[in-house]
Image 1 (cartoon, each protein chain N blue to C red):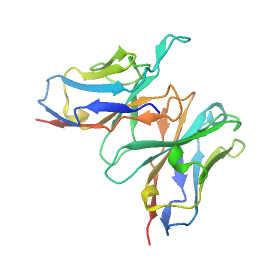
Image 2: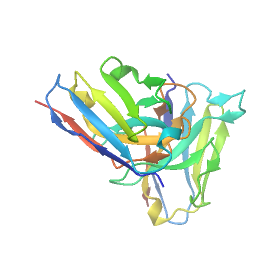
Image 3: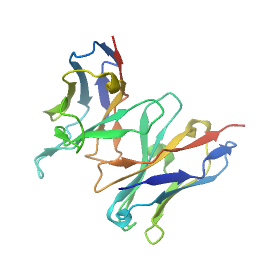
Image 4: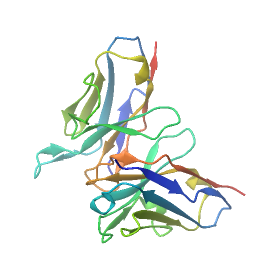
Amino acid sequence: DFVMTQSPDSLAVSLGERATINCKSSQSVFSTSSNKNFLAWYQQKSGQPPKLLITWASTRESGVPDRFSGSGSGTDFTLTISSLQAEDVAVYYCNQYHSSPITFGQGTRLEIK
Amino acid sequence: EVQLVESGGGLVQPGGSLRLSCADSGFTFSSNWMNWVRQAPGKGLEWVANIKKDGSEQHYVDSVKGRFTISRDNAKKSLYLQMHSLRVEDTAVYYCASGSGWIIENWGQGTLVTVSS
């Protein structure tokens, strides 16, 4: 199974500052046949279902603010929020959809400092 | 727009059975892979199972293999999860979720399953 490990487990950032969340996969999620990384990021606010933010490691979903960006390849990935807003308080999850079983990271809780 | 509504959750004793349902009010149900993802209270997300657009292929996480069965009825735009031999550790909010492939794009609000004596 692909084990997804996020760091840190929790993070406190001041409004307007940059937030960075890391995700490491135990195996490469890169597919040579499609030349893509099968890696997504989700945001889950309290009491709500998750919301898809980024697919293919770096492609923002429609309607997702451009302060959210994804990067990385192979086994190491990063979600960056360039200028933290109050509405970004949430738990963030990385997810691989390369192979079954589909797996998620343990989550990173993002708070305002 | 896809709107997924789960039902069927509740309290069940260990060893019992429960059937979850998910209704899709959108127009693309038969074009989507469908998933069940669960979240234990205060914990992270755990993918449970998915099923191909035409129902011909299913995948499960090891912890539910042989106990849970995912199925779908495209004519009714509905997804199901039959759960047998339930354990305390199966207690969670169960989300129905869809995607054009294995990307989980749209999520329902979830239904709570509590396994307790």
